[in-house]
Picture 1 (tube, rainbow, N blue to C red):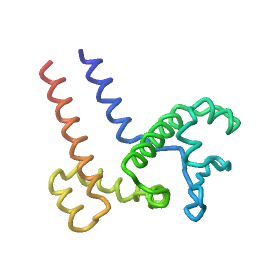
Picture 2 (picture 1 turned 135 degrees about the horizontal axis):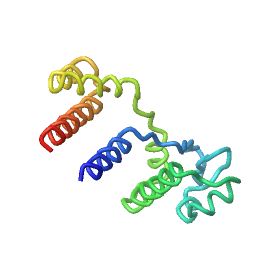
Picture 3 (picture 1 turned 30 degrees about the vertical axis):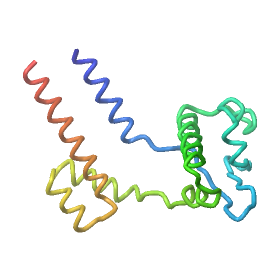
Picture 4 (picture 1 turned 180 degrees about the vertical axis):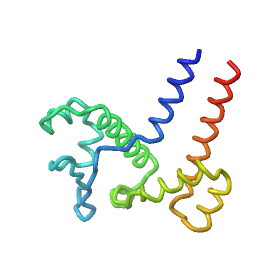
Length: 154
């Protein structure tokens, strides 16, 4: 039972800390919107029809596990955006959004982990980018406390 709880906690922690590894660069000025993946250009309609093996074949090397997950998530978001009636330029703007600032998020995790709700309050006041990380830190703190309680009782 302890091994199952530890493995679930490890998987959840890995899911929180995992970074997407498939970079997407778009060209919104084009009539038929193209996406550059690993120095090759694909249209959005091509990407929705490709599967992982075909993309790996076109790219010249097999996709690793993280790239497969990132590609699956990207295709799903693209299909949802098309289903909701978004235009190609709106999709390009969403894809070209700047990434979150990871260093501020790390600071928020540290604040939430060590200071709890006070850390979240500090993140809200001083570091607007670190709020999500602070809540993640609180969840990690709660998980660690629950594991300590479980192992001390059992």
